Length: 183
Image 1 (cartoon, one colour):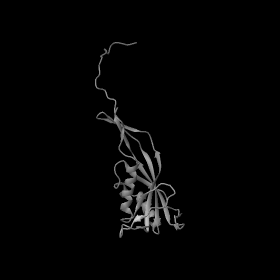
Image 2 (image 1 turned 45 degrees about the vertical axis):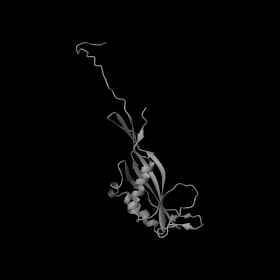
Image 3 (image 1 turned 30 degrees about the horizontal axis):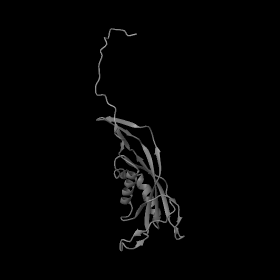
Image 4 (image 1 turned 180 degrees about the vertical axis):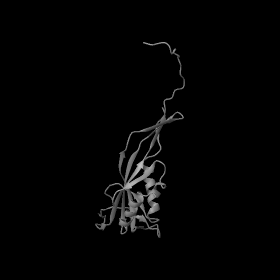
């Protein structure tokens, strides 16, 4: 039996979002993938001296926070294979840190609703909208308050599962006279 395969997974969505944000945020602005795990924010390598760690003035973190199914499957059969596509909303929390965090949060929210952004994503992944930016400061590992603005980005995510289709290879046709009534 051939195992099903899927063309898009969560990593693909997170990569597409990171690539898109890299095009609208300042060049070189560091990004990390996050998860609530009670560890200190990461140290980044100093571009001037890679042997030293430093905290950049602005950076952002992406965390998957939800996957909501939108409807029934869409099925297609071609060349002996069956494709089952599901439509979902994939939610990504974007935490932006630094003194300009509010500015970048507003840019993110605006660009997520702009037509130009659609062309920046691969097939099967499309930005839908972003919620309103929220200021949610945090206390860092040194006990200091840090500016953080959060925006949740909703992305349409349409993965297709591919598996062999049951197909008919032979058929026997038995003609029945049209003038005979079958009871």
